[in-house]
Length: 203
Image (cartoon, rainbow, N blue to C red; front, side, top):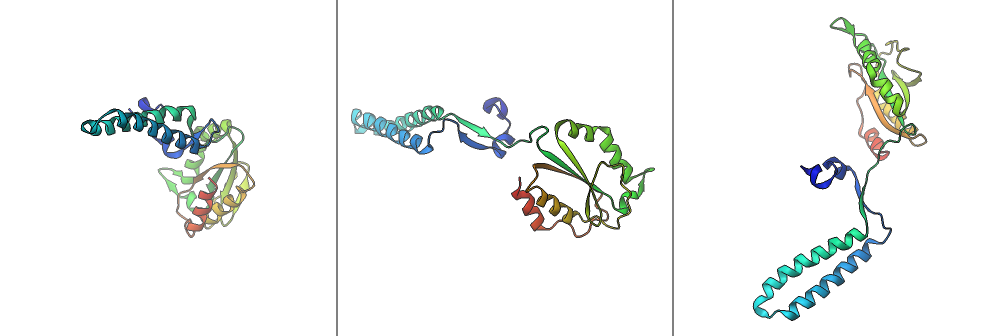
């Protein structure tokens, strides 16, 4: 229903910001609206006597609001929202390479399940739209060509340090998104607030 009335989903309005595409200052719109409201008020209150002042106030409010909305259309309001650009933004995929990924569940290791997910279309889907960089997480974060060289020999996966490194790289690289694939079994230290704040600041 919301999308039918306002053209776009609610999430677009929540994540986007209102912009005026005409290039005119918003203060000119405010000034024009105030002047128009003053003119309408003067015409109404000088025409009607005291017995109709209450009705005049209601009409003044409705007409002033309508004029302000019509004037706003001249400023060409719109919604600006950030999106990832195909083949321009980089998607960083962080793969857990700790020993816990070698544990077997239902006849298959966690590492094998992660590889199956990538090979089932996730890797191809990302590769068709974005530049993809793969990293393996162990005691340190290392760049890797793909997911086939994972060994699962690292005693832990330092997730927080890996994300901090990615955040630092995003200052010079157009990293638009992170995909983290881990079981959380041998993750050391968790993710600290400083790392989360650093990632948020680069959105």
